[in-house]
Image (tube, rainbow, N blue to C red; front, side, top):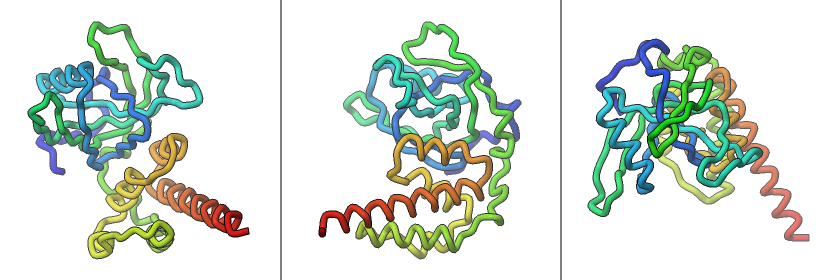
Length: 224
């Protein structure tokens, strides 16, 4: 999804952003994430983001190993900020939005705020490469990635648009598959924090192979 705003580096993003802790939600730079917003605090967050010229929301996962309070879960330290690039009103009080990922960030601190939603001071500098589209995609082992995808689809009796997959650049393919992956919080966080696209693809392949092996072993156990 094209954006009206162009971000060339960390200095062009605000240092304090609203955060949306959401389990299983993985947003990556230039990836698209649809969201159904219905909680009052997050409806207020979207309203404020639309008023603010940045239109930015920080997506981050709660940390299941340190859960914290139900209404204020502890989160991982790394997330990804996205810009609201689509918004529709449902007619029953909800917002249907789409975020387009801009850059990962690391939380520096969470100040006390008066807003019903949380805000954090963040640092984008460790992820400066996120602002360069398709950086490092030539190092991705595309064949290994497609082989793992094919095996996963076959094992789960799923279909895919192979014509579209074949046409997708490596960055779009790796990030889309990572975001759509059905894996747990720890695996998704590892995909998010991968230092480069090559490593992210390798993690995705490895996790997929582990899950396929686990399913195969469980199937054999059931047959015995």
